[in-house]
Image (cartoon, rainbow, N blue to C red; front, side):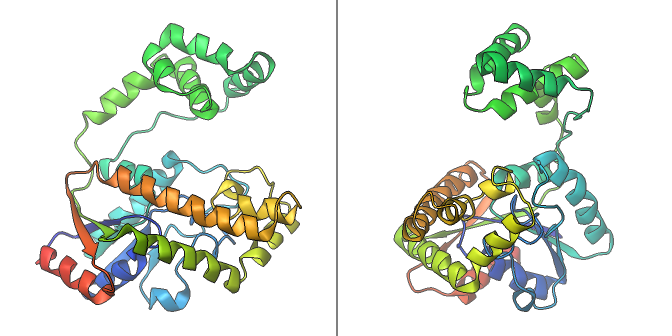
Length: 307
């Protein structure tokens, strides 16, 4: 039996239920791999499992950052890796579950991320972009790292500045750094699962209902409380699907009905992107939910693969 399992898939596909069921059977602990569930006091809109849903199973990497913090894949891996290692060291099964494919891939591969220093160069690059436009930074990047300059879209200002910053701080392009990283064998060798619906419409229906349930559970008050404590509208956490749309409604920039429909639409589009990401992984065992099929059948299919 492999003692590390990854459960991936789109939002509202049943990842939480499967992870907890497997954790009960395999003496496991769950490590969340969700880029928004890391934020404290953002529970309803990120669909964090409740205490009742956890059913006594230890959960890690939930509520580990303040909403105004900038969180990254590098920070996630730095925090999650020792947790996974500790679970394995104690003879337990580590069940890594979530829909953030970038974080999950990086954790499994054990990527060595380029350092993020605080020497002022990033601020200088940000000032340059503000004064002369991001094209001025792209021009600098193209002179030292044409691959990154061609690969990154001009709208992706954060990564463009990051790529230039890495070169200025280390003398090595981020392209070369990433190339070296890809040659390193993966840190973990998990059994991979991903969930999907035989009929995509079933998934979309669950997504729409989930948004309605979040509103019933008090999502609007959750957002109001965050704003009241001074969390900036434009910070990374508040740009998450389900938050930015209702912030606009609360600030009078749209109606609640419009915001609800937009959250449902954006969530469906996000689910499609998640499926596209995970389909690139040839190691994944796809657990397909047939129409009207419950969690028991999904668990049975996973159990059969593991034995």
